[in-house]
Image (cartoon, rainbow, N blue to C red; front, side, top):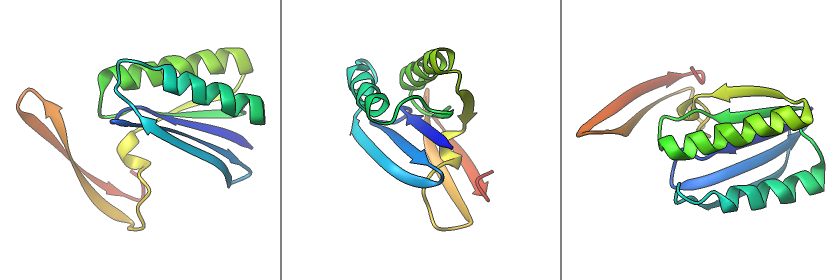
Length: 122
């Protein structure tokens, strides 16, 4: 299965392409969350190289509202144009970490924070 993963909820934008569980390509870039040109340049290069995805996974945050909104919009457009299945996934559950259980503390703005405990990617 051809899978495209998009993540823009942090200051580092990223995308990955998997084919039958093999990581074929991973890209990261500075994500200022106001200019989405780098995302679309990377999407263009990846789709030219690999074709249309069968599944698109997009990070839902928590994190930058603007970055997350841009990623979801791009993923929705790709879903529509390619017929791919679209899946939203909480960004903190997709972190690459070798432990079965971990905790995340993040900035929730307005002088507050959030705390999440992740077990088995849930």
